[in-house]
Image 1 (tube, rainbow, N blue to C red):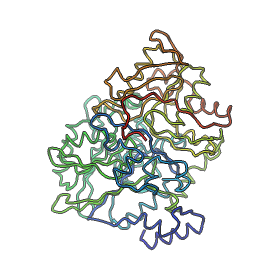
Image 2 (image 1 turned 180 degrees about the horizontal axis):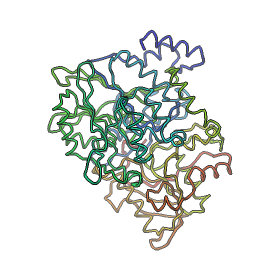
Image 3 (image 1 turned 60 degrees about the vertical axis):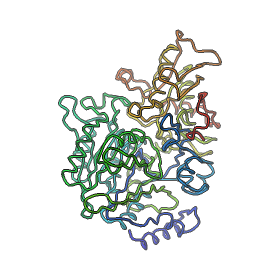
Image 4 (image 1 turned 180 degrees about the vertical axis):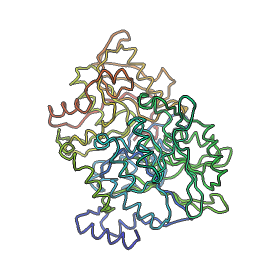
Length: 569
């Protein structure tokens, strides 16, 4: 798509009702006018979580960095992030990268993402960057109702139409090993490389997937090594992939880097689903990787972070989530090595990018059989509903309230997932919007008798997963959301000493006393076999009974020793 074609498309779209919030066709063109650089390019998306249509997605107000991560990307939010990266306040970029004045700014700048709008941007960039590869960091086949109901087929078809060249994975594995292999060996055969060096068989450690692919772009050999989420069988039910093992696998990764260099790779890229903190540590310990294009933690980081290691320097990026961003990596390769590069993380504003007609039609066809179910109204939200943040989100609180009321529980737990779209005040909560928060293959709800000591152990374990100073002992989610129970948390303390002052209705929790605790998304096979009601049924029942959801007050822990932390708004 040449510049003239892009302007013509903008004009046609504007005449058809596209609202350009920045005020003009020229503003939209200027926003996405990214001069080409060098002789080869990569485009990078990650963690779209099956969002085919434009959505709202609020960035976190809490993303605490502890220890060496204090004050360092990605643990910067709000104005601190803007200052660190030199982004002016009150701009489209400021809205994209922060939660500041979110509801009002979302009205100004509109929705983000959407594969039809992303397709327009990809085509525009490829027109000025011949041969540019499109890489997908995973978490693509999960996160929406249609992806769940089609077993990921809607996203597989959309990715192929978008022109994805290479991908790695995480939530894809929760469709089960057989389904993943069916897609990789069927839909993707000869069209798309699925790479994951760190997934091997548990018996003989044979590779399950290609560890890397070697692609030539304008005469430059580029190796793309895949790093699937290393903790998949722990963070998600192991019964989905019973014969495979994962892990970070440093030594195996170093071997793959050297093998790719031996095959003539001038550039080595790690397409990673580790999470950014893990990638930063990994970059300091592995030699020979030029760039890590990262995902999993949903961090929209405007610029790459340089990391020194014994072999030189590696640049680490993370490209956000929900189709909200597209990373553009332009490289100048001379004499068989990377000489220079340019990187920019572009927000995908649906109001500033006309929809690609072919993709729009394909998406409409995919969704058509499900529209009545998707659009079923459940309630109206009077306040902002969102998920992302270290400790709680208003949609999470809604789920907790529903679990406690419907299940008759004293306390409720909800996983610290980072995916899930945002609803503005006054929007209808449809089944589709609820499924954006809950669409998983293990949605069972539970009601368990737990002692006060067990409750504390759960909170301590999850807090350590989030705040352990060693990134390799983190798994990238946020803190378990808690309903009914008040508690304090000191993220700077050591394991076993972070959680305190647990109270229920103002009374201290007793270690030996039992309490009714509701939850969902259990990873144990026994919980699957028990067959609890799907969480979307429980929350639907609650929403229909109430009809209107008033602005929600979050149940947040009392935080200690984090005053002044730039990971707090």
